[in-house]
Image (tube, rainbow, N blue to C red; front, side, top):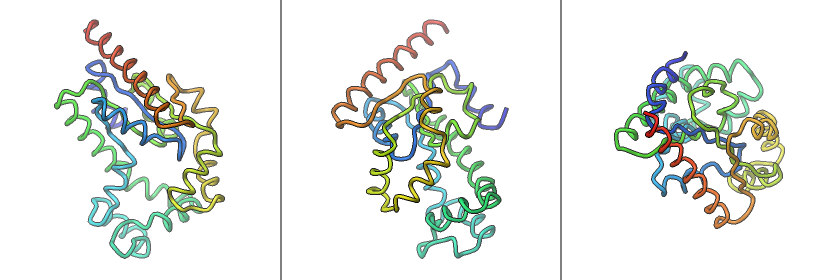
Length: 221
């Protein structure tokens, strides 16, 4: 059992622990934002990753030492485009980056989760882009929610959002778990290929399902 599991497993059974994942551009943030408005506690590991690699972020010193200043931008943040190209090209570079960032992300994930539980939120949602790929969340969460849409929609969204060429977005998709595998692992699927109003209805239904899990946990404790 790793440090994340040993720390977060103490929350198991106290409140529902929900894993939220999906491919790039599927709409994970849109779903988590709606859940937050309904009162959920949100721990977004991608947001944490951006925070620790921002200017003066706690990962920056180690990244600079490992990779050099050429992998930082003019503001002193991680140059994500340059680093993305490096880790796609060299497995050892990806492993070196993960060795720096993963323990820090884990540490902040635990800290945020504990603070949210102390505030009395009804359930926790861990937004983890590579939840399935990491292999470390199984047995920890109570339900796995997958946000899904056709790959062509994912590609279009990411190209528009991040101004990336199509080939690069497709390469990112290929490096992630396939859509079929994610759907096979999901306990609940949120379809996100329509309007925001339609997504809102689905998220409200998800919220009610999780509140029922909470009630069941309380009645059995």
